[in-house]
Amino acid sequence: MVQVRVRDGVLEGEVLDNVLGGQYYSFKGIPYAAPPLGDLRFKAPQPVIPWDGVRSAKAHGPICHQFDMFTGKLCTEPSSEDCLYLNVYSPDLQPKKPLPVMFWIHGGGFLSGSGNTSYYGPDFLVNQNVVLVTFNYRLAVVGFLCLHTKEVPGNAGMKDQVAALRWVKDNIRHFGGDPDNVTIFGESAGAGSVTYHLVSPMSKGLFKRAIAQSGVNLSHWARAFEPRLRAEAIARLFGKDTKDDKELYELFKSLPIEKLTNPVAPLTVEEEAGIRLTMSFTVVDEQQFDGVERFFYGDVYERLHHGIHEGVELMMGYTTDEGIVQFAFSPKDNFFDNYNKYAQCFVPIDLALKCPAKDQLAIGHKMKNHYFGDKPVTKDTVDVLIKYLSMQLITFNAIEYAKFFAQMDRNKLFVYQFDMYSERNIWTEEFGGGPYISGKSVGHCDDLTYLFSTEKVKADLTAKSIKLIKNMTKLWTDFARFGNPTPDSSLGVKWPAFDPKKEQYLVIGNDLVVASHPNKEDFEFWEKLHQQYVKH
Image (cartoon, rainbow, N blue to C red; front, side, top):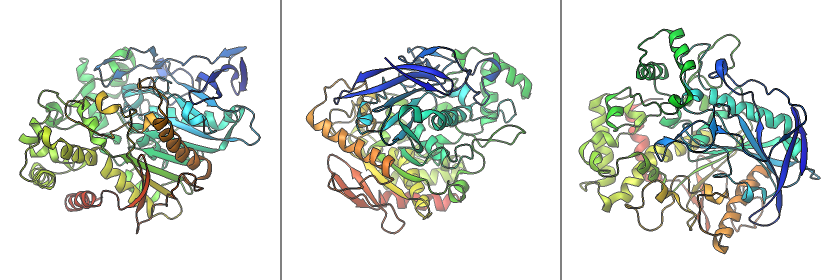
């Protein structure tokens, strides 16, 4: 039995065995905001009501009610609209010197996911002597609906993230953590979130460092496309054809939570046909209302140039084969058909949203010729398709972001390409790529299994994978501790900061290798197309 007093009351956690040896302190299901129920459904999170006595912190709180992106059904884990809970794991509650804090923001397309140990077990990271915090935030409609009104301004899920960060600032010292040395890190939608926190006025001063894994806020899926029109289209799904603010608000407030996990309301013919995938629920440019804090407003490119919090150090990167995740969202029986039929399938989505059809066809033909020449898209050329999809979904915008960020000499940047491979690389099969891909693949999410213990990996820990895990977690925790992922020579490599001239980065494979100019040929081709057809 172990107890800790936080701002709102006393928590009773437990001491657990670490799979790598030793033990750690675990406190789960800690409320960081009031339940967002009733009139609070779309509002910014409200303060926790303090409790009397001792509150058990031995089990996760419910996850946010959600749609499982991979099964196409409602998630079967215990879930609730009352889901704003976090978890704290510490190797030492009373260290001689406060420990670095790592604050994990889960991915899942802003539609699914949680901070639970089923995916994000703390063993590997706390073994490196840091305090780890994981948490839930509102998802899908309840997290990201935007009517551009005071009642539903948008970004509620992002304001949940800020509330959790504020809780950490106020309470983490009771768990042995240093509130002045917090590193936020996340993957996919969590990485997009991280890069929004770098410019959000609400987040300023709540963290010192940041790690963005496989995602940035420049990506099309991290920016809402016509959120008000999307809300009206969703309302029509439920029989309410109106543009009236009050009628829309009352409808969305009254609908059962099960209806709001993933309502599909296409706004374009391409969306309807499945040719174009735009995210329905993500971060919006908030309008200003009296008494309402704005998480994000303005243009992401302008804010990247002029709004990054000064002095924050950043580590960012991507996996080698990010595009494998696309298999999870594509028809299995005719996966390649559209790519062979329609040149528009090869148009980057950010260009497709801004260019007329004639330009789209020109771009599509140039892109297809760059990657395939005269060859069709088939199982035999799937590796080439994955290169295109990787750039489209993650890699182009990640490198673009790094190049912009590196121009600001007041913020240090480290860039990586993740290329580790072992029995822990499970996500090609999980995403449905197994029938198409043989041999080594390092897809979207494959980095996570080297940072977190997870029930998804059935294989036992081998000496090889333990070595890879220790390399990976040392890089991440040394960055959190020192602002430098290789402060000594223990890993046999010195990871240089990324600068505009040399553009050096680390290939994090089974060996660690410094390289320069990431994806140079492909990036320059994509950049030229963007310069030709769209001006930022």
